[in-house]
Amino acid sequence: MRKITFEAVVLALATVFLAVTPVVLAAQKTASYKDININFTYPGWPSIKDTMGSTPGIAVAVGNNKCSFLLSVVPLDSGTFRNFVNNVISEQSKAMNVKIDRKKITAKTYDLDSTVTMENQTIHQYAYGLLTPANVIYQFTFTALADSFKTACRPYIKATTENIKTVKPKLSEQVFAAEFRKYFQEVNIGSNIASEENPGEFFRTNVLYSGMPLCFKGKVGKVIPAKVLKAVVYNVDKKSKVKEQITDVVTEKGGFTSCEMLSLAPGKYEYKIIVNKKVGAIYPFMVPEEKVAVDNTLSEQPDQSKFGEYFTNIFIAKLPAGAEFDPQAIIKTKVFSAGEQFCTSMDMKKQIPANTLSSAVYDVNARQDVSPRGAAFPQALGPNSGESMGNSIGCAPLEQNVGKYEYKIYINESLVAVLPFEVK
Image (cartoon, rainbow, N blue to C red; front, side, top):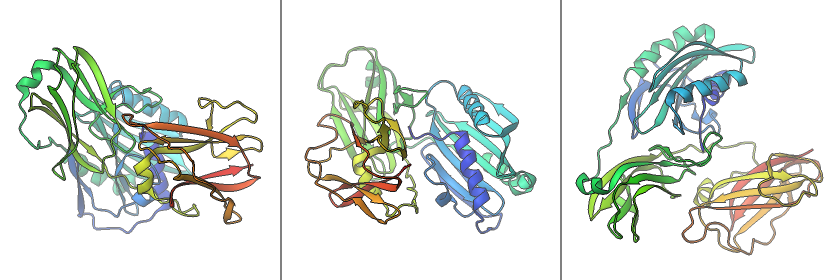
């Protein structure tokens, strides 16, 4: 799952602060943020998102020459908000030289002052967290060098956090709940992306990042006849249906969870449950627009839109020399030794037609392909009809000598992935 922790926020903001000196703007200038759950205003400083790399869940990142502000968004996977906060603080403290100066945690909010020592400098961070009714955590973080934090950041904290307002989305049409309540006892929307803490279990959220399936979890108290129940995914911005599905079979009493990977453009949506041709419930959700970081260390940039059309994830891995192929035993890496097996893992959300997928290996030092593109893969790859995702893992003996390389993947003539690796 695309998840951001407090440690990632500290590292990202600290790196930004130590490396970047944006132009100072007037202190009175503000900017505004609004999404499906909250709205608020914050300091109108220059954006520093370009310096954040691939850190996920970043909604706002701004800074002047002394203070940085960041808003990050993450679903609450499981357990209570209080336990989540305490756990990640504990993990952060173990991984970094962090001192917690003050913390206050309630059932739905937290306030945290801490300092971290990096590169012989002490950085002060104030973080405020808010759990919304949709089980989404919003993290507001101010960061500056410790000796200037009081004057550089403190004046903006109160003004920012005290104007946060929760938002109740306006529904696109009227809801007739009586018929819905005849059958359903409990309903939630969310996702089920696996994480270390959550091996594929449902978690409630109304913010779906790329690679997160849309899940519907309910509890039926009365048998629902066939063709009575219909689900619609509605694009609020375009005022059009994205998907419509009628349940052709009887839905028995009891709990159930249904998940589907949908290719949805950034924007606002509604999940509508229609019972006997009447809209019985509407659950608003959003797909945030995610900034794609440009890696200037690559020899060329892949087509991110084409990647997003077909894939949720691609990575390279290895197996020991002589080991039998076992997709469960591959080790994700970017560094190989002579004799090891080179493996690729691709998670696909759309079938790749036969004779369209190909690859090449580029020698970074020689600035040329050491293994030019060969014939395209002769078979179709990815999910078949009715499936939401497909996975493909392949391994072959490592052919490259000591050096730095890039593994490039193409669909027809479009470069969709550039994966750096090194042989030592």
